[in-house]
Every structure is written in structure tokens, then in C-alpha cells.
Length: 189
Image (cartoon, rainbow, N blue to C red; front, side, top):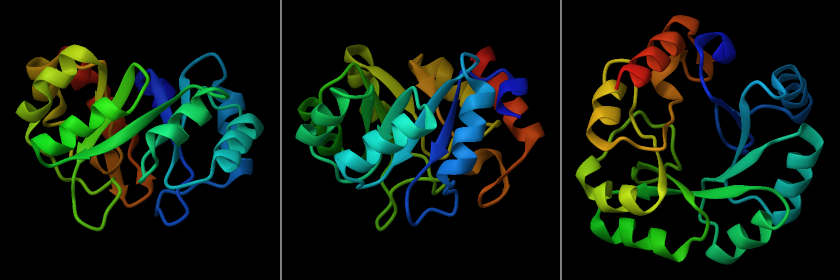
């Protein structure tokens, strides 16, 4: 579905407690089918370096996204083995300032919702990341869906946009129509 919709990347979620969690065997099949067609991104939350690197190798991930409380040092360690970037939850200027402590050229910004690591469907104040967007390759997440992604892209011109709940029929079940609408709207932005 994601490839047919014209997306540039697909995320495979390995977060232990996520409704969207995928098993390694299924992820390996998807990655093999999409090899050299899309960027295959593995999403991890508070996993060890060895787990992230091991899954990345076994599945054939192009990149990993660290979406938990990982330290800048852990990001650096993982980045030495597989391309990686940090996801940060944004709710204030202090959260944006934290981005400077993480290396790499990319960073994903998501809505800060107490008790949740992401995938909540909530947006955040995009003006908070305007300067960061000038300094880094920003991927905007957090409450994006086909009806608001075009506005996000027009306002920020980010490196990329990311969605999960915004293209679902129910938690973990994606809609081909919503994915296609999301990609088309993002490209219009």
C-alpha cells in the first residue's frame, strides 16, 4: 500500500508495547519486497544497542528511528553501525533545545503527550520548531493526516512528514485510501 501510494519511506514499528508492533519475520518479508523501492525505517523505543543493531541487520533496515528516552551517546553508538536518528516529543521551547544534544542531520519531532511515546494523533505548535527546521533535516510527526499535512508542508517545508494514526482505520490497521490521500496532500504542500 505504501509503495503504491507513492511514499518515500515506510516505518516498521518494533516498540514492545505498541499496538503497531510488527514481528521480525513479517518485517523481513516487507523489507525484502520493498528493497531499493522505499527507505525502510525501523522504529524502536528504549531498546538496547544490540537489539536495534541486530534487528536492523536481520530485517534489512535502511535507517532506525529512536523514539524513547535514548541518550545522545546511545544514538551515536547505534549510528556507528546503522544510520539512525532521534525522535523528540515537543511541547515547549525547552524540548526543542534538547535537540542540540543529539547528533546526526535528521531529527523527528512529534507531539508531547504525557505517558505516550508517539502515535497519539495529537499535533503540537509547529512554530516551536521553525528555527530547528532551518538547522536540521526535520521530519514532522504528531497528528498529521490527509486533511492537515498539506498545511504543515506549506508552512515548514520540512525534510519529511510522518504519520501512523492519521492513516488508520483502527489502531494498527492502515487504510490504502488514507495513505494515498496523505501522500498526495504532502506532495501538494
